[in-house]
Amino acid sequence: MGTRIIDIKAPTGYSDEELRQMVARKTGLKSFTWQIEGKSLDARKKTDIHWLLRVAVNAVGFGQPEEEPAPGLVIPYEKRNKRVVVTGSGPAGFFAAFVLQRAGFDTILLERGAEVKKREQGIIRFERTGTFDPAANYSYGEGGAGTFSDGKLTSRSKHISKERAFFIDSYINAGAPAEIRYMAYPHVGSDNLRRVVRALRDQYREMGGEIRFETTLTDLETEKGVVSGAVAGDQSLAADYFIIAPGHSAYDTYRMLMRRGVGFRTKNFAIGFRAEHLQEEINRAQWGMRSLAGVKAAEYRLTSEADGSHPVYSFCMCPGGMVVPAATGPELNIVNGMSNYRRNGRFANAGCVAGIHPDQLAGKTVSPAEALDWLENLEHSFYEFSNGFQAPFCTIGNFLAGTEPSKIPETSYPLGLKPARLWEMVPPVVTHALRAGLKDFNMRLRGYGSGILLGLESKTSAPVQALREPNGLCIGFENLFIAGEGSGYAGGIVSSAADGIKIAMNLVNGD
Ligand SMILES: Cc1cc2nc3c(=O)[nH]c(=O)nc-3n(C[C@H](O)[C@H](O)[C@H](O)COP(=O)(O)OP(=O)(O)OC[C@H]3O[C@@H](n4cnc5c(N)ncnc54)[C@H](O)[C@@H]3O)c2cc1C
Picture (cartoon, rainbow, N blue to C red):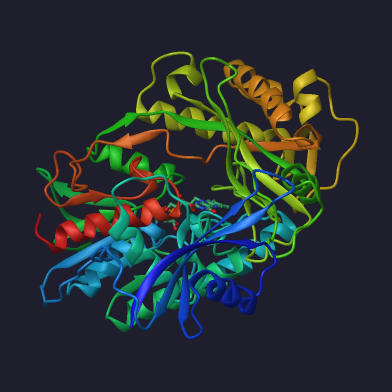
């Protein structure tokens, strides 16, 4: 039995039996098995939208494929008698702890938020009552910021193929749909993610890993570059190594790390708003029709350099999804997006943000601590404007023309909209860039201008970056690592998980 790889152009609504027939026609075989290795939608011509499939066909008489599969991540087990305290159960922290525990380290995972079920209840309560729960919200809790997301698993990071493969296999073993292995733009969906996160936690505990929920790392005991204890409330946990993976929302944790001598620099990031449209509008713009058999909902990715100095781009698109109140504190008003696996909601949303440096936002050179203060103040100003968590909003037309919204439109956002002069609520440099970008988007995606903008979208990536060695070690420290999105070296679920895995593997291999 051997394998041959073939490419097939398939209609969007194909069935398994039709695919079998297409394979049979293309290979001339009667008896074979097959598995899909790659799948992407080709919608360049609206009159000929189809799937491009890469299929591995297994049959007697076929040779082995010329390309050997790339070797996977090898995690050697030995009892190491070394303890690691990992902070943050998001993709970076969880996967660091998961790999280390599997390799024979003794790990403890600290998570300030609640376990996923309790977290879900806190989010439901927040969306019903507007009462923010610091331990159960869209950013904090089991699985980190990624748990209540669209679960898009795309990543532009290079050199993470082994880590990515390990992550994808782990997700599938924990119940994620197997198609995430081969889809060009894989996504898990928030509904699946909650189950995956729970199953991974069970696996981690079965290996002996310990998780302490609702336990916040408040300080580090350090002396001459050596950390001896992680302080969480009134307890101190001793360990040989400490990995901090706090995401980019925990300003208190950033400030504590800065106080303890962890170096940071400012870096480019992006801010703006979340654009919401009727999904049907996006489907028509992308496909020329309301719906397409075999494809859930149309996506878009837009970038513009029209402003000449700041790139404007769509970010984290959630087809058929919801705009969510992603506040990270009781008086910070921030929006983000999520969707379930079926992506069958009435609305589409995506960030519409301008890439910028904190110095340009503040209008002067700022330190990393000042950059965080500046961003937190902006997030707070959106809260103050609404005196709560209604999302300040205007239409794209309003934003371009500088006119106030005259009525409240339909939205997926659960806590209501408040009409706002959004163009005056962010620095002029951002408004200028977004106006140029939005005009450009309008020309490139028919109907884009019919959408609304909700604010504030400030969680695209960290505005600061830790000073760390290539192995993740904080410069000036012997046993303190910083991982994931909060380190400023990763962004998104996959690259953050990969960063945590790499740091763990460096420890496993003694590098
Ligand atoms: C609503 C939403 C939708 C998103 N959609 C997508 C998507 O579709 N695809 C994608 O790739 N990315 C998405 N993202 C971004 C993605 O979730 C993050 O990039 C990713 O989760 C970062 O992983 P991380 O482990 O570095 O940090 P996080 O996931 O932020 O996890 C950090 C964890 O550390 C905990 N923590 C922080 N400080 C402390 C402390 N002092 N003590 C104890 N615990 C602490 C936090 O509670 C949190 O659970 C989305 C984010 C949000 C909010």
